[in-house]
Amino acid sequence: MNIYTIIEFIKLSEQRGIELLIDTLIIGIEIGRKNIENQNQIKLMVEQLTTLKKKIDLNIYSPFLRDEIFDRVLNKNEKLDDILIDLQLEFQRQSKIKQQSNICEICNQPINNLNEKFNAQCKHQFHQQCVTPLIQAIGNNNCFKCPLCGYTTLQQELERQIKDNHNIKRSCCPTPQCTKQFSYLGQEIYRCQECGKKYCLKCQSQGHLVNQCNNSIKTAKFEMGDNYKECPRCKLWVKQINDEKTLHCTCQYIFCFGCGQKEGTCSCNKAPVGIFQSLAWIKRKIIG
Image (cartoon, rainbow, N blue to C red; front, side):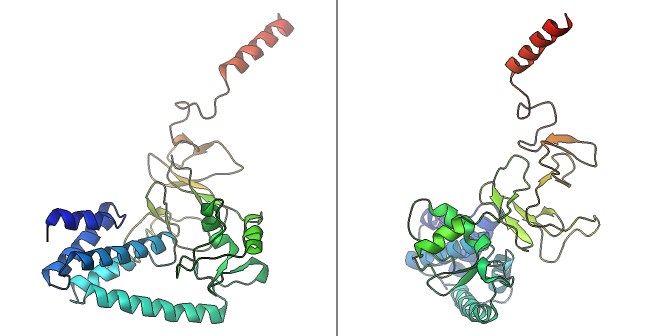
């Protein structure tokens, strides 16, 4: 197999940085062990890893699942194909348990109010708030693709109910210059699909290894609708209060909520020059 062809296939997994490296190592190990012997097998594995990535992005799967797969391939000598099959069977088993217990498939939290529940035609169930970003991404298409099984269809009435739900409170991505918003429903990890950064909402820091939260700094519990931005200087998170346009960090750094630049260096919150000129003209006429 041509090495450049292999690389082109792996690039299709839509990974980048460390995650792309992990995918490459996993595929390389499998080729070295002769568990993958042709391009069709590589393409199939890459498609499965791509599907895995999308479900991690939607918080359906744990963001640490990729590390677990890598550990099982590297240290336990398990075949990637067998691991993916085992995981699929386990997810199906868990999905049945969630349906019986009225648990949302995305956030794994109970659906206490039936008015908040969304039943896809494939029988998978979600909080309306959890699928709202997916509905918004549909645009004008009259269909909904289930993030779990890929089943496509959505009753128009349910789609209307979800789009008209004004009780949903959105939070912003913590990256200073990023404008992406998401729905917080108890998940610990948020991975932004726009800027690509991964954050732990529990300890309010950028993504770290499993169970390695930074407990040295006390942080407030993240709540639905909270808006935090990471301080460009010290990396601590600063909460927006009353829609304020500038944030004041404990390190004494003041920066713009919209673009992350130091106060006074951006034009986000400055009134047009014409307004200041008009005010000056009025002041001269009144005071003399």
